[in-house]
Image (cartoon, rainbow, N blue to C red; front, side, top):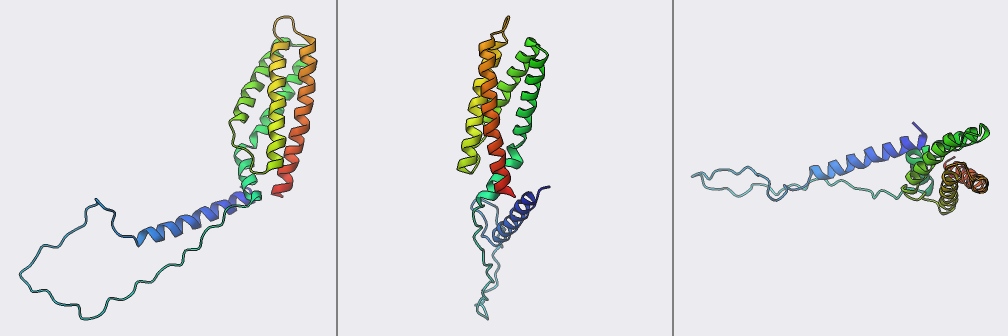
Length: 186
């Protein structure tokens, strides 16, 4: 477990403890069964002493997570996509070196699927990192489509060359994004 994950877990546990403690002192919720006491023939007595004050718990507001914490949390949840995309690109390159159009087409279709997954992720909570990642995904989407189109039938070399250029541009953007994440979370 990474350090930031431990910190987030401790904060979550502390927050739950504070909330549970506060809830434990609350009045019954309307509509719940509250036991009642049956009336008796005994006269009621006035209380002999003043009610004592209940101790209160001082609840401190929880500060919003820092950009570093947010980026680390994003990376912990969604960072796997970098390895997935790298694997897709490696497979495409291997099949290209082997001149296997069918295999490339399959790999490029998988890249399209993984790009669609990444497009569904929330933005990385740092503007520069989000921009680098978003640009990389845009280049990959174009590359994957050009690759699929270029490997259909007997192949189209110009589309495959364009896909290769787009993959290079995507790689540059992902290299920048991973460097941004590393700098922000170190």
